[in-house]
Image 1: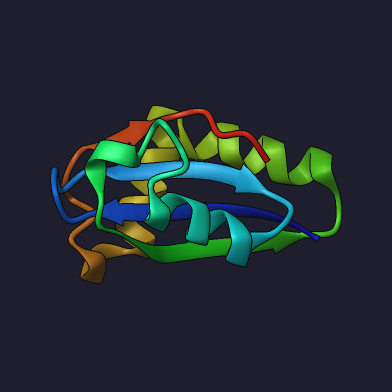
Image 2: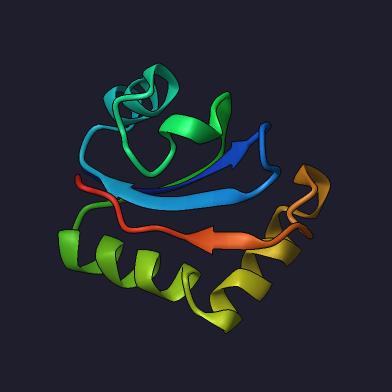
Length: 94
């Protein structure tokens, strides 16, 4: 499986959008500070993810969420998660 996920940083109130093949391990790496993009933004919490059978579909979805339209769609889908904050697109290593 391939996953696209959104983390919320409780330090800077921003969001991180990423892609991975192992959601549990990747979120654990973010939480432990092993990912440079979120190391100084901890604590972070997983607030959304989608699973895909195809890597191509997952990376397409990740790229979409990092666009203006994708950010707007996330704000609508996750309005109860205070996603009205700025969503900071960051690349991630799967």
